[in-house]
Image 1 (cartoon, one colour):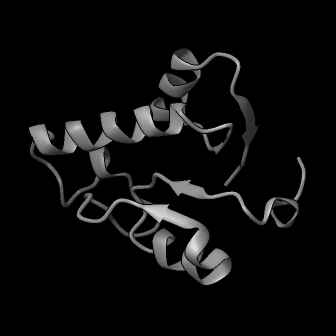
Image 2: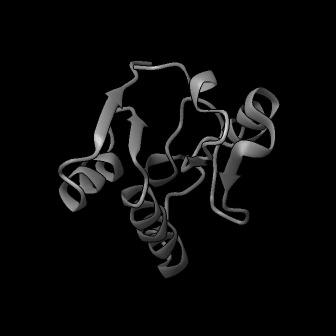
Length: 104
């Protein structure tokens, strides 16, 4: 994978349920990072849909947030992702997307 530094004009759309990720990415990449505000996020090591703090079923708003993130990711040229249902859905929506996997 080419370094992000080679694509200085590119934007980075960050879809995450990690509460710390938006700040960390903005610290590293500045104004290039696009992230939706008001989305449910949890601490490191948790996932929104499996979090102990979230024992109730997902709300319609949370489900819509996931769908919006997946649709926006499918508009991207490159997908950098871990193993998740969202990244899998994106690859079904856009089979030709250049994909790079990150292991935790």
